[in-house]
Length: 283
Image (cartoon, rainbow, N blue to C red; front, side):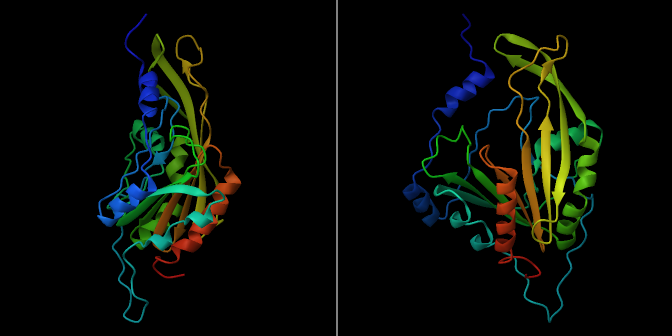
């Protein structure tokens, strides 16, 4: 019998101890104006890959265009009413965790960045000016390790021209990764070896919300042992990410496994209307 747990077993054990903060504790921390962090624990096969991208952007961002004196005042802060609200979700929300940041990269899918850099391409991450993020947890949800029903939203303010370009050039960003084979070492139980899997990204829908929107689909094949062809672990689930622009704002939305593409599109449309509260130019 072996004494050392595998990586996956260790993570599974650790996740049993994950505890959500009580709503009262969250509100108390908010009153002390301490920064709240969202810890999302995700067990991932290295070859399967899951969400969180930074979109490749131009090496040089265009200068910020100052509004004319007669134009509406420029909005800088991203207020909370520009984010999705609990009432926008189809389920009752037990806890809402959020955080804000400065100069954060616009994240979509980290595996897409790995695909690009493996081909000698610059990842060229585009940094935002300001950002807010939040995670909704359905009422009576199981521990976060199930992630069923979770909704996450990241909202970024960019230089206006950069926000436009991010949406307009998304097809060019994913084009080199339409059919990418990843190879890496793996350990599954007592078995070790070199595994391989094929990843594919595609923009599958556009123009359904805001000033510009896209659905980014990531699919992957069953990881297999490179020598024997035997499958490794479970087949990965397709993941869809919604990217929406309103003025100089970009929002990135993801849903848990229980969410459908139709649910994601509906939330994207609601999010676009909410973003009008903080966009430049105003809606």
